[in-house]
Every structure is written in structure tokens, then in C-alpha cells.
Length: 263
Image (cartoon, rainbow, N blue to C red; front, side, top):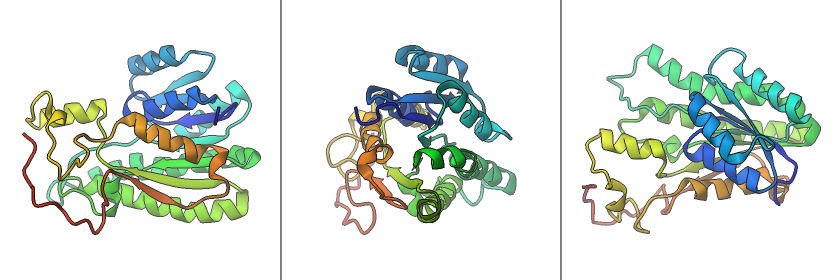
């Protein structure tokens, strides 16, 4: 058990990558604080994991005081906190023409400011356990798809924050901060997003090699498997690192000639 007896907060853990991480953490011996917006989905995950190993907190991550309430719940339930996984995010399409100040501030509040506030709230407890923070970013942090402007900005900021705090908090508090940047992952919501964009029900079965050399995109469970390393003691003192998780080099790639689109 690589996470035996660790207590971990996983935000946005009612679906997708967050759900997969929470389930994998429990399978590795951890106890988790689940978090999300949907009560029914949270209760489904809680029932699947079991009340002995998890508790669920329903709230918008950007609400004032949400970070404090998540930390208090972990400590009240299990007496300590060993790690935080900042996974909750708003994946929303936008361009320079559709992004106004209010919209951009909302995206940043959810995707960048809320993770910062949770780290800030958790720092005292993480210092006691010499704990870890794992931020879930995106390969869009490097530049981003044309129609993901605000989201890409928020993930780029998160990446810089991970490096900055990964340096400072390791030296000052013995708390590690790292980030993984998933590529294209087949989550429940990604399936629905692509269908809403007009793609076929089984669109993920017909992805061009340019985007998926292996013949498929990533699974949430594969991201969860990678997350365990950064949350466990196996990663030792490593801090301030950002790792891309995709099936091809993301920067400087020699793209194949086949640029056909998904059909």
C-alpha cells in the first residue's frame, strides 16, 4: 500500500480524473475527502468507496471559505492531513472575442485562485506531516487550443504557481508541490463535450494517429496511477516539477502528415 494511512483531499472528485485519483488513493490505503458540485454524483462515489475510507463535501470550490471547510473536515474526521490534490476545474471554451473581464475572472477564480487558497489553508497541517500538494494542470498550459483561451491562461498560471511554491514550501515547510499536465483524457464530460460539438456517439473510437498514435486517448485511471507517485513517499524530496502526461512530445513535435479530422 503506497499511501497507507495518508489523508488526502481531492477536489473535483465526483467524476473523471478526480474520481479516478480518489479511488486509486483509497486502493493504496489512503482516506480521502471527496469534493464536488453534484450531491448525487458525490454520494455515488462515496458509496462505491465506502464511508470508512471517505467523506464527501459538496460546494463550489470558489466559494469564500470552501478551502478552510475542506481542511477542517479532513482534520475533524481523521485528525490530520497528508496531501492535497487540486483537480477541480472549469473546462470552458472561449476566445479573445468571447472572453470578457467577468468571464476571465470566474475561470481564474476556479482554476487558479481556488487551488492557491486550498494550499494556503492546508499549509499548517501539511507542514506537520511533511505532506504533498499535487496540482492537476493541462498540456494547454503551454499555449492552449485556439478556443480554450481563458482555460489555458488559468492552467499556465497554475503551472507557474506550482514551480514557485514547490521551491519555497520545500525549503520553508518541507512540503512538496508538484504538477501533472494531462493531455487528452477520455472522461465522462469529455465524451459529452465532443458529442455536443456534433461528433458521433463513438467518436473516441476513431481518432486520427496525429492526435492518438496509440489508437486511443488517455484513460482517467492512467492519470491516477501517475498521481500516486507524487502523493507517496516514493517521490522523496522532489518538488517544483511539472510533468506532461501525453502519448507524444507536446512541444517541438514533428507532426505526422496525416492531419485528417475526427469523424
